[in-house]
Length: 347
Image (cartoon, rainbow, N blue to C red; front, side, top):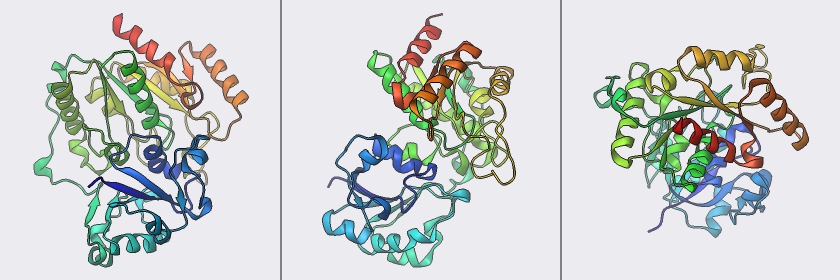
């Protein structure tokens, strides 16, 4: 039987918190997507609301309504909340899905397998993607990465929820379209949901083992696929005070280059506006990456909330200032980034 899934985005589809939903709609996806539950858009096409292109995937008001029209096998929580807490608004739909025999797939830190009521209702079972693996299964950094000759390119960001995974996937497809074998190492739950073969869940891994698990994923990818380029999906940001991340992708993975995702109109780190936690200047981030031992090969813009002419002007100004390609992936694709990577590899 083909596996298909409903995605729960209840009331959050038009926000950065629904990045898992957005990624699965853009594809690829481990499961065929049967529909998205969000009453704000019930009856409309999910692809059209997301990117302006119809995809044949409908919005439903509830799981109960969706089950009147579709027969999915799974129900995915398609949102990421602050602290990874399960929103009360999702619980009723999860219970409905569980009682109907759907397997629940959860990427939140709050584990559904700790919820006795959901466990009793979940006839099809529960997958908690962020359930920590036992330390006996984890690996320390060993230095084996030093013998992997394939260049690594990390897609980092100035903040979380800024489009790093989307850019990484687009660059992979751009490289492949030009005959360059490339793979993405996933580091978040959405990567697994999209069917990526190599990776681990960064923020569900005991800190001592993050570098080793990253190394293992890269080594396994090299041995299993013989790629010419390995792209690394970044998490959070180098200086996000709530969860700094990224030095491992440069230092432990011995990254050759970085694509840096930037949101010009975002002043504060997401969710910390009230504390006045400001995103550092772009120029400082470029220098920090250089000091960590890599260099930024290109800048990509997260243009949410900007008019097209405004984002185009900002891209031109930043490119003139920093002397490296600045592109808007969702508006113009990543052709220029692919060309830059090719040039770097041949130099």
